[in-house]
Length: 138
Image (cartoon, rainbow, N blue to C red; front, side):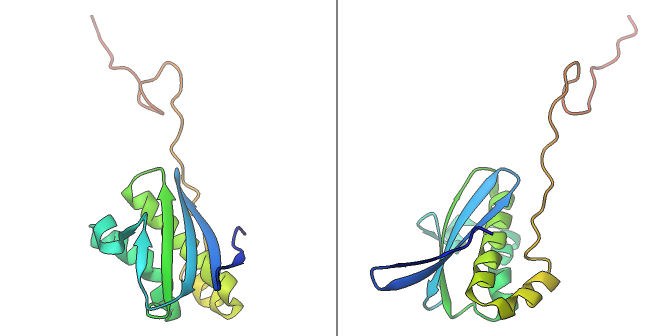
């Protein structure tokens, strides 16, 4: 697990890393009022889709820590949904590091399981991973 506790400048942060497809999210949790910042932008400004916003806050809502922790996220790679799911996994891993009592609730909701589905590679002689060329009779 890639979650550690860092001390510096009087603040203690809990770190976590989440991945999905080609997206990587680095999470930093600290005590606060419940603000979520993603790449120096608020949650609503970064994820315009409600489904993606709900995915990001799901671990906090599941454990009842939505209003107690500030979340700072650095996410890169992939698309919007992949980034949202990477943030979800990273936050869940950081919460598990914060308190081991939260792990059963997170595990039961499937928030600690990494989605291992990746894009299938293109094969030679084909137009994509599986699609062949169009048949021509003449």
